[in-house]
Length: 334
Image (cartoon, rainbow, N blue to C red; front, top):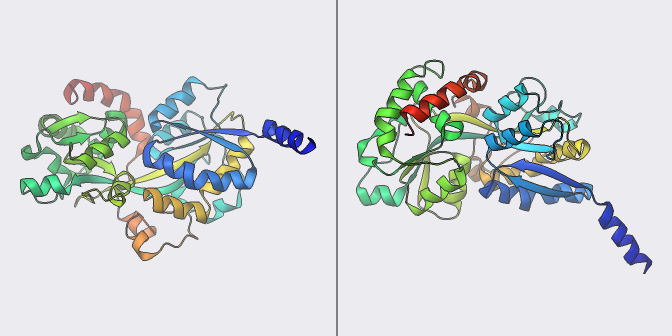
């Protein structure tokens, strides 16, 4: 009777941490591999709210001052916006931050990367072989007429704006000279588009089934599909792939800031970093992590591989995004 009463009291006292992050294979890895490490350490329960990075930031903006999420895992572009909007609390005082590569810390001291990735091209090898097509090599392949009705690009607030930025870089400029990219998207890519899809997990599925032959995605979205045995491949375009980074922060005004800080410590730990590499192909940001050669080959691993990718100016992009969105809707996704 006493034991039962104590068990009931413990269950009632169990704290719950609400967090937000991407869905799909990422959510699966977090829930099955990372959260158990945290729960074993703290005894707390975690509730995961899946959603796109831009949707998560929009939710935080709408609930400013009365947040239900305490911790978020989102892409570095939207995170730059979240930091500017003061949605993130100062980084907690946790020892593991001393082991993080300097390039994985966002300006402002409120957010940190949890994994590196590359944005490039994904293609279905069976569809390409059936049509006698060579593997894609360039960002400009998105505009090749032979792929009409077989190309999928994200919406402008997601992989769409990354595609614009990388087309601008491929043309010899940058996101600060976006005109050639818009022209190419409107005149060459739009006629090829099967869909403009906002959910990366859906794009991965379309690539896996062959409904889409050529897509713009991160290696962290393509590699899990490859690991499932699907006939797909990821390409680092010859003009360069975009350097991406998954980022984390404790939400400003979080209901459970201490638990959120403990979860950040777990996510950045070597054990969790290895699980993120295995499950969703994120390259470690923790300098103490050592990966087996076979796993290292699948991810953005180490300073040299990071330097080989193209970093874009997210602060600039976020300022231009409202205007670019209007133009995108008018000229590209119409």
